Length: 621
Image (cartoon, rainbow, N blue to C red; front, top):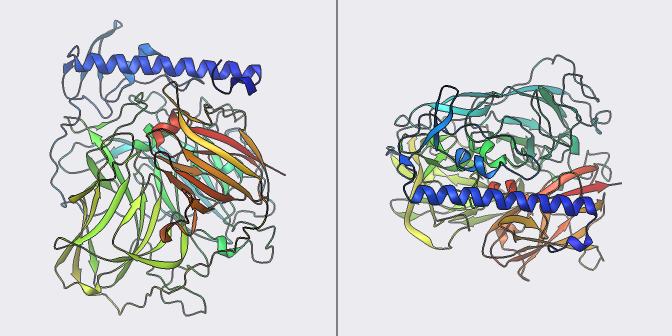
C-alpha cells in the first residue's frame, strides 16, 4: 500500500494508483527518449518549426501521454512523416546551441493598456450563456454588478523575440505576449469575456484548452481560473459542465472582508496592487504559459491612486502613468534550439532552465528614462528559475527602494541593493535616476546561479548576466512631483494569543511525481475544507532537496515565522507566494473571506504543478 492510502476511500485509492502508474510510464518514456538521444540514436538537425514537435494528445487524469508519445512530445524533436505511413524518422535540434543574439538593440516593449468595450454579445449574465463554457453562476453578480466590460481573445500569432531570431508562433492574450495590461480601480467591478481562439489542431507542446487565473485576485471561485475549469470549443475539464468558445470572468474589484467593512467595500489595508493573469490549464500550465499566455492586471485605490499629482490627504503620490513612469516588467528565461525556435520538453518532470532572458517578451532589451523617479513592477514569470536582481552602474551595485512584495505594498519602504524573486513573486521598486548624469547606462543584472530544476544554488555570480539596459538620456518633461512616503500601507494587527486551527502541508516527491502531503492533485476532491472568515495557521514544509515557490489562491497571507524566526523586512507584508528552500518551514496566517467554492494551492514551479504538486481546498460557509 502506498503512503497515506490507508486513509483514502476506494475511489481515491484507485485514482491515486492510476496516476502513479501514469507517472511511472511518462517518466520511463521520457528517460528512454533522453537516453536514446544521448547515445546518438537520433540525428541532430535544426527544428523545422516553432516548438517543432508533433501534437501531444490531450492528457487524461494521469497527467500526460503514454510512453509511446513521450519521444514525440519532448520539446524540439521533429517527426518526419511520409504520406499515410506514420512516423518514419525522428530528428532533434541541438538544444543549448541557440544562435547568438546581440544584447540591447531592441527597445523595451510596453504592453498596451486594455480598453473596455461598450457591450458584449451574447449579453453576459449571472448564469452562463448556452454558447459559454459550463461554469457555475456568478456568486457576486447581484451585489457587485459589472460596470465595465472587456473582451480578451486568446489566439496564435507571429512574434519576434529578437531581430536575430526567426519570427515564430506564440499564444497570446489578444495575440501578443505579454498580453495587454488591465488598469482598473477598486469599487469598479468588471466582466472579462475570454474567448479561446487557439488552433484545435495545433502542433507542438501545450494544449489548446485554457483556464485563466487572475493571480492573486480576491475573486469568486467560478472566475478564479481553477485548473480543472479548462475549456475550448470542443473540450472541457471535469469541473465544468460543457465546452464553450468563451467563458465570462467576473472580477468584483473589492478589497477582502467586505462583509466586515460594508461601508467601504472591504478593508483597504488589505488592498492589492500588482496582479497578473496567466493560463492555469491543469497539467499544461507550464507549456501554455511558456508559449506566451501571461499579462499584468494593475488595480488602484485612493491610497495607491495612479496620480503622482494627487494632493488629497493620504495619497501616496508614487511615480504614476502606467507605461510611462509606472513600468510593468515580466522577466522570463527561455531555451531556443539551434534553429532559433523556442524549445520546451513537456514530459521532463525536472524542467528546463533557459539560457536567454526576456523582458516583456524581448531578449535583453533597452529602456530609455528621464532623470526622475520611476516605479518598476518586477514579475518573475519564468517556469522555474529564481532571480536575484541588482541595479549596476559602472560596475557598482546601486541602491533602490522596495515598496511592495507580491501584490501588496509593504508597511514601509525598504532601502536595498538586491531583489530576490522566486517564480511568480513580484517586487515593486522605486528607482531615482535624477542622481545619474545624462548619458548614463545602468543595467538590471541577475547574479543568482540557477543550473537545474532543483532551484538556485545560492551562489552569487560576479558580474552576473545583464538582462536589461537602462539609458538615462533626457531631462524630465516637468519637475518630478512623485515621492516615496515613509509609511505605505499599514498592516492589520495580529493577536498571537488567539487560538486558531492549525494545518501542515508538505511539498515533496513520490514515485518521481510532485506531491502535497504525499498525494497527487485530484481536481474533484478537496484536501481540506476551510470555514469562510475563520483564521487558521498553516505550516508549509519543503521536503527533499528541491526549492518550491508555493502559491495559495484567493487571499493574501502573513508570514509568522520562517524556520522559527521572524520574516525579513521585505517579507513582512502580505504575500501570496512563499518560497520553500530545501528543508524550510514557513508558518503563515490565513483567512479566506467573503466567497465560497473551490480553490488551489500549488508549487508555482509550473513544471511541478503540472506534475501534480497541487491541492484543491474548498472554502465553505
